[in-house]
Length: 401
Image (cartoon, rainbow, N blue to C red; front, side):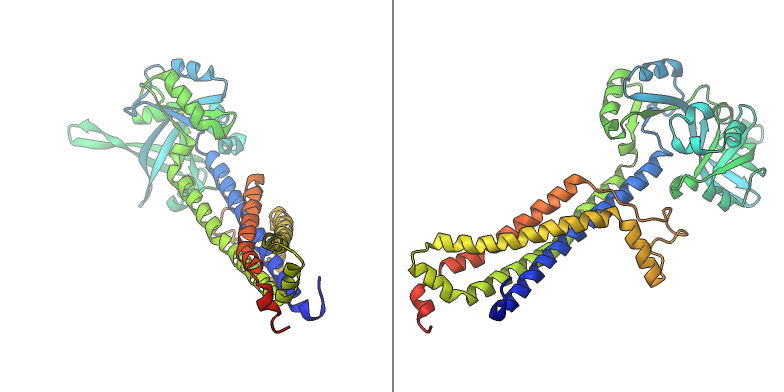
């Protein structure tokens, strides 16, 4: 707050505070946006995939699917269960042919374990009746095949049938009764839904080959999977959603960790500015330090003075950085909309991304860790200048005064 000849040092102190505040705010906002993206993609993914999936080691049908269903439903975390049949196959229409994962489901039971099935119109769900051989295709898959509702496609099963003319593939005509959009390209481009009994007939299996489970707390999926594995024994393979998408979630965690390290460099630069501020202050106050020393001030007392100044600058910067970061993370969609209006550019192109608004999820732990790390960096930055101030010799400092 000093003026006059010390005004420049005050200006540098303000810049140091602003640098720390901007670094902390940027770190909080970016981490919140990454959390939001992760949550958005995870929710869209979990709308299609199951929380926990049960299959047999060989991939064949369950010997007694009802017994397995009764066992898993006794677990307190299990909300719903639905049997299914899943096989890879080829879908063809004219000269267009695409590989697909054909999943046989029981529509009413499936709606209890997957959100995107529940979002299908009732008429589409009711069209998947046993014996109807109707199919519901993902939007991208339907676009690749060039089909619409009411068109007929040919399913080519990988398991052939032996005839006098040799081994021929099994073909089945299906009618497209609906098209879904899950918001996740991988599933929209490869997934086809039929009734579970129709799938059993097409692929010649006597019973469902898997069971999809929905649990109360998705973050406890791994622990619940371990418990179910111990309950069902080695005849059933239990996989939770974190294992089914392990590579993707590992990549997101690495990206978030690296982004945190990169953005802390902003705080580090601001901390170096703090070092510069204190060094300039010590140089400017050499005579005053010498007078204090001659009046009896100890080196430790002088060091505390400059450490206090640095800590106040750092604490103030961290405080305002946390405030700006929280506000920025909470109103990031408003900020992005304003920037888009001013610049005329779209940050999230709807034709490329499945989301049109920048998501954000503010986590208290991220804010706390960012604030503590930034404050610790500020405290470390004060050590060397304060130590140099405590080493000022009164006689040398006052020689030319």
